[in-house]
Image (cartoon, rainbow, N blue to C red):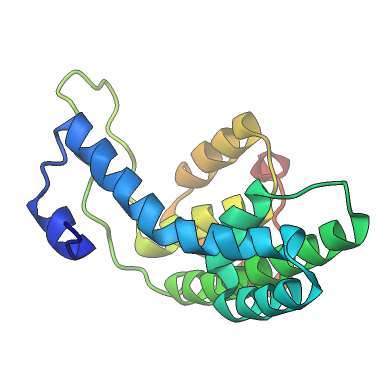
Length: 185
């Protein structure tokens, strides 16, 4: 029976791994099956079908990214180039939207509630503001650091005073450069 996905999600038990897996598979099937078939037409259809499929992919944008990545092939380099140009274009469009939100968040100094921690934690995590979280997310998006360097820079940033954090946010917004914070120690 075809049921609206919102009803299925509303009624599910997220603590039941089998049910969660089943609902996630349902979402994947409904969300990607048709898009995957359209992407396949770009590579497997006749010329007219491929042109039609490309037109649809361009219009649906980021919904096509995952199916396109799943069907990349070096067999036809010109198709690979078109696919990657489309994927990068969709990604950049989303990145621009993400950056706009993060940039607005960088101006908001609202304190976030402390995270839930277990009683056996020796050290309390530092207080963090919305702008601090936005800064850390922006670093992830643009700094292209390995995981260890990312964690080091996160810890260094959170060890700064609020005034020092504000200065670092202002510097990053002005220069649009994401430097290692260990340079300032």
